[in-house]
Amino acid sequence: MAKEAAGPDEIGRRYDESAPLTNVMNEGQVHLSYWYGEEDTTPLREASRRITRKVADALNLAVGDRVLDAGCGLGLPALDVAENTGASVVGITVSQTEVDAATARAEAARMQERVRFQRADYMALPFPDDSFDAVLAMESLVHAPDLGRALREFHRVLRPGGRVGLVEYTLESEESEARAVEEFFTSMGMANLLTLAGWIEAFAMAGFVVEEYTQCGPRVFGMGAKYVEAARGVRERVVTQFGDEAYAGLEGGLAGFFEVGADRVGYAIAAFGKPRG
Image (cartoon, rainbow, N blue to C red; front, top):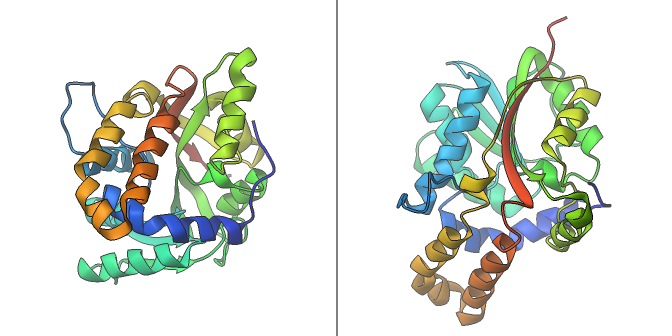
C-alpha cells in the first residue's frame, strides 16, 4: 500500500532531528535488529549488524565492487560492508546531519578512502549510468515519495548483472486489518508498506528480476520487547544529553511502534538483479 509522502527536504529535516538520539540508541545504525529468539541476549548494535551481513551476503559482494548505499543513515552499515567485503561504498541520504555524522565515523575508522557520504536524493541520483555493482536499500524505500522513480534510478546506475539488496517492512495483515496498519505507518511518516509480493512486483516493473528473498519478521519486528529493553539500557545517556521528555518519547514510541505485531507487519531481506541482456 502507498500513500502520498513527504518530499526529500521534509524527510531530511526529520532525520536531522532524530539522528543524534538514534546515534545514542544504536551507535550508527537506523535499521532494525535480528534476534534468534527471546533467549538471544545479543546487544542491539550487534543484532542490527546481523541484518547488514545478511543483505551483503545476498548481494554476493566482492573486493573492488562499487556499492551505493541509498539511504545510508549514520554510516555504520556502509563501513561494515566495506570492511567485510572489500567493496567501496558511496552512501547517500537527504539528511545533512546524517552525512556529517557518517563522514566523521568513516574518518575515525580511517576508511574515508573507500567509504564516502554525500547528500543526495535517490529519485534523482547524481551518478552516471552503469556506475555501481550493487545498490543497498535498508529501510529507505518505505519513505520514497515515488517508488517507481527511485527503482528506475537504481536500475539506471547499476551495471548489467548488478544487484539491489532490499531490507524493508512488509504488510502481513489480512485485508480487513490492512487499512489500520497502513494508517499507523503513515502516522510514522512512511509512504510505502507493501506485501512481499508487492515489493517484488514493484521491482519487476522497474526491470529487475528477483533472485532471493527471506521473510524474517518474527525475529525482527516481532522482538519489540528487546528494543524497549535496549532503550532502558541507554536511559541515563539519553536523559543526560536530551532530557527526561526525550527519553519518555523514545521508550513510549518504541513500545507503540512494535505493538502492531509481527502477524501484521513483517520484515524482508531480498536481492534483485538487473539483467545482463
